[in-house]
Length: 435
Ligand code: SF4
Image (tube, rainbow, N blue to C red):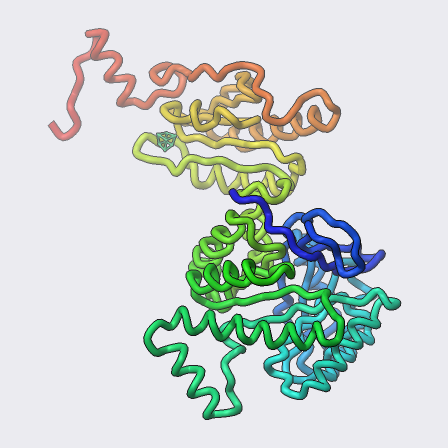
């Protein structure tokens, strides 16, 4: 893991929603010293913004899942007209996503939105872009609101000027696509940032999304080396969660491990709650955010398994998500072969075996229960441990007793292992399967 890249910070939100700092480590636009903020997780609503009740309900659901910032599309005047009501009913910073129509940005700012996402490439009139910049600068009682500037792969190629488009596409696809595309992204970004600095506006975040993980990694690395604005990471058009997850995590994880990235949005053609869940899990896994709730460790199972571990693991996952808020480690292991080692660092662990499970709390054995009782007993131990942690009577990650593996032949062993043991003792002749 590389240290976080210092950036100028931006601030999103107000006293009612709480303010989310993005980036940091360099002085902000008012000259105040800052430290890097935790990487934030963003997502976007999938429904129509003008359907206020549905939009508010969706924002609540995304916020409850852990989203730090929620973006809404405002393609029409009726969408920006709904913003005031939406802002009054929600308590998470809201970003207005603007394309083509600068008036939507002005209306969103007027409604009190916390940030604007703008693509200067599809608002061709410089005066219109300037009007948006000036409005953002004056918003929030003169404190201003930030703007995200995107040079996403899908929107930087010229589409109206056919000659220009052919030239740029030719550059992209001839010879070495990657290099030409990066060159276009950087050139466009420099052009856009000039517009903002000409107006004395620096509260900017940058995005450079692509559907290709290698392009995302190279584009953001290049931008990080050249500009000190905070970066909004994302893989665009990543597809459904099943496939988009790998593509997003490999790109964003690589950048984040390299210290690059200040806020992330994972984009799925699936329920957007999954974008938040997976974004948080990515940050927790890299140690970039403090985990909220339990961390589940579970074995993949193999031919030794003698309980329904997949169902047990899913049951444990659901119960932990609903009832445990302390970041304890919980291990669900299929047998005693690798269980003790893999659960060594867990606060609460179960080793399953011959239709039974032996449960440990910080290395101390507390129960041996039949398979059908494992889930309830494990959860009861997790809740009791959580209560002790909250009362200051126990500390997370503190192992009190070394785990002594249960006897694989006695309490948890399989029929096959028991027969083998009998054979060793010479009391029962071993029948070879299929023999
Ligand atoms: S813990 Fe046991 S059942 Fe699970 S994968 Fe390892 S050896 Fe197989």
